[in-house]
Length: 222
Image (cartoon, rainbow, N blue to C red; front, side, top):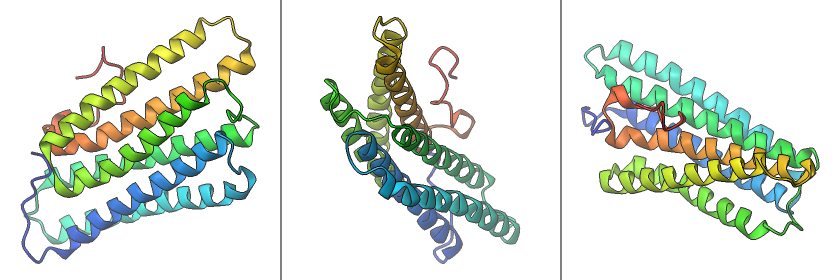
């Protein structure tokens, strides 16, 4: 298990870094919820500042973690370099989730709304599941449960394939662009959020050389 780290009982530096990772997870879920609520009929203008502020905080936390990792492993020269690589990969993917959440909000800010759409229930279903999965991602990182991680990855792959199929259908659809384009963009963003969440969870079960490939297409993934 990649995240079975070797540390001293008083290794408060890594404990603090792990707490910051959890903050990134919490902030990522917050911006996702705000963005998806905005695009499905909730307030748009009133949450814009909060989306952008929280996304900036995700970026700031990522930079803080990078600095702390460099300092920590410089001071503890005998530390496990694998651990640093795992953290670096995780926070990169968490930052990318924040970016895609902001992309979803940008659609709402451009006037896209599915509030009256015939397929609203399907979109709300994706909203609820992915929001729960972001929270579950943080929980899996905390408990480091390999069985739950593998189940998480399996379901995530199913979602990725579902989003791919939906986008393909829209590409070949005869529906007007005002119908097809916003949905294709939304499903593409949801696929990327799902993929980067999978990358984060790979830290629990994958060898370090195989981390971080779930944002690749299946035919090129290692």
